[in-house]
Amino acid sequence: MKPRFVLAVLPLAAVLSASGVSRHVGADDAPAAWRAAFARPSAIPAPPGNPVTPQKVDLGRALFTDTRLSGDGTMACVTCHDPALSFSDGVARRPGHDGEPLPRRTPSLWNLAWGLTFFWDGRAPKLEAQASGPIENVREMGGDIAKAATRLAADPGMTARFAAAFPEDPRVTEGNIRAALASFERTLVSPKTRFDAWVEGDRAALDPEERSGFALFVGKAGCVACHKGWRFTDEAFHDIGLAGVDLGRGEALKLHAADHAFKTPSLRERVWTAPYMHDGSLATLEAVVAHYAERVIERPTLSADLKRRIDLSPAERGQLVAFLATLSSDDPPRPAAMPAQVQTLGTPAGHAVAASEIRQKGRRFTPGSVLVALGQALRFVNDDSRTHNVRVDDPRMPAFSEAQEPGDAVVLGFPEAGEFAVTCGIHPEMRLEVTVR
Image (cartoon, rainbow, N blue to C red; front, side, top):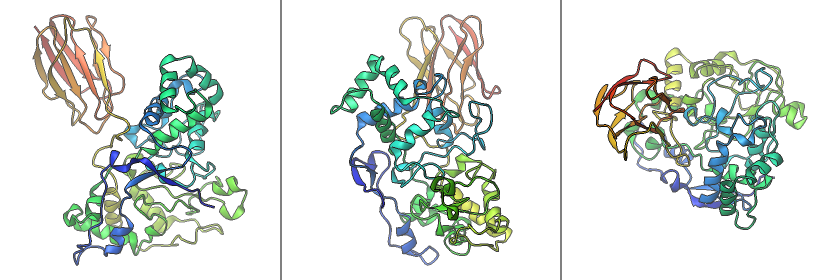
């Protein structure tokens, strides 16, 4: 029996704008029915027992980055679910606490509010259960929710947040931790892309190659059999003929017919989540297309929805990959629930004000040199698609920021006059010459 959902009081417009489906379809466009099938919903669903509120989202966001949820206090949810990598981690299988790779790839967290089950094998029936799974896994965060609740209850700031988020039960409890994390995760809705603009009627949003890729996706290649709806997933479990001994859903259900079956991943923002598949075994989207076209392993449990062989020319494979890219943003998107952060470094004399902004797009500081007055500060804005770090390796004022994700800013002040060099620890070729007078 499917879980029953109601629409949360938080409108989807709070995270992304609502969309409609254009009925003005040109001769070279897909039928209007396909556009309607891929149209976005207008609200975020949530279970009746845990409606989404701004206070819960604020608390859940704080817990998502809180290392006190882990056993040794060194990890947080964000450690593996990096917003800059579509809430994944960029590796095939992350090492566990024992140093050995975990059995499966870190999944993305986009659009989980519409999920019916969670984890690659679907073992969690609701998002609240998923939220605590990695925390209490001894090989992942190695934590204990009950002990974490005790630690958090000793923090006056946290107890105030829990009271605001759960006025009917203003305590730091295991259940409230799970509910807050799940509420935050429900707001992680992937933003509109060029594909959505095309769905809404902008015929120029996709070029001819991308539109040909869409035609293959819903036609000859048969991808839409499993990757359907606006999230491009049927929420079902399929054996897609990938090599490996992991039984996936079959092990979770103790059902042989479901052996080697894993949940259909959403294709939203997948450009930023490589490598692919439940085990991270395919490095590129081109490799994914090649697998379905010619490398499927025949076995009795192979999904009935899977085409056995797909005759795709090199040009058609390129078209399909081009279309898949339209389901991702041009730069790694930052969800509305995770606003940009501002870090402050240095101790400028007097009352520091931002003298000017330094941009970081394209792995370079712009401008490359700047003159500021003593007592002023510089504001470094990461308008790049990469993670940066602002640092000054100078005995007069050693300073370095934490990871500066796209959209984040770092405010840097200078304690004395002189010449200073600012660099990026991740991209050392980035260099800014600062003269302070």
